[in-house]
Image 1: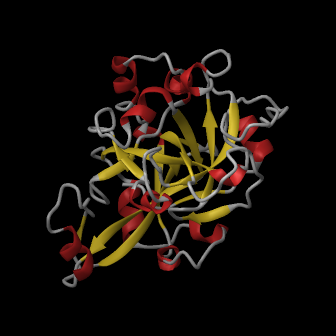
Image 2: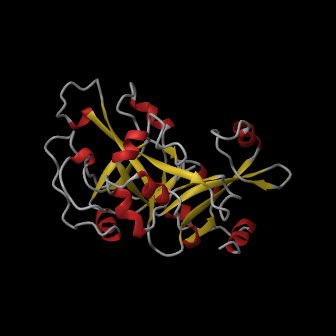
Amino acid sequence: MCGRYAQSRNVHQLQLAFALPEEAREQEDDPRSWPPLEELDPDYNISPGRPVYAVLGPPPRGEGTGAPGPRTLHTMRWGLVPSWAKDRNVGYRMINARSETVADKPAFRTAYRSRRCLIPADAYYEWQLLNKDGTAEASTSPATDPQHRRRKAKAAKKPFSVHYAGDEPLAMAGIFERWRDPEVDDERDPAAWVWSCAVITTEAAPELAHIHERMPVVVPREDWAAWLDPSSGPDRLARVLHETPVERFAVDEVSTEVNSIKNNGPDLLEPTAGDGADQLETLF
């Protein structure tokens, strides 16, 4: 799964990294038509519910025109709120969408068909479980492991950051939605609309499976256009979901300071000198 990540680039840096026009897309007068763009501070410990950047391609459902591929940068809330939800807080339970079921699950299937995005990250964090006897085991997902809560409660957690070996940002596969807040009367009030997103996850590659059984889908640059193009068919999308370039990843054991969302700063990405980090270096 992906429950925490870091993203420190500003709007201009992301425009360069994702080959976006340097001239920002003009904001729509109608907040229903397209998400806003706000300048966000660097965040090295992004948690569910926080505002995040997302790269979008052509407008969903045929709204507007444009060539397939990366087009514009926007800000959204992390944690997808389906259009039919009664409460925006449902998004806290929908920060991830499983690749195995995203095309069929009611909360995600419509967004998967026509509202896909890329979610930039410097790195994502994942935790390995440390048992009291000193042994380590991979963290699990509550969706697949009935003993998930028991395992997590009995073990300490060793954090790792996963990122590209170079300076390129990760482009995590995402989907997004638009939700109408019934408590705001005026539909043209920006506060009446919540734009939100989720990260798509998949079974961890063998190189990462000793840390956690799941990992976010990371889209390589050559697949950005296909992922963002609303006309991409199910076969092409399925291939993208299986093409995370794990061979290009680097993994660092990092400080347990990242365990608390109260801590935030570039030092959270600094590797620690530990046996776990040394062992990981031999895997890549």
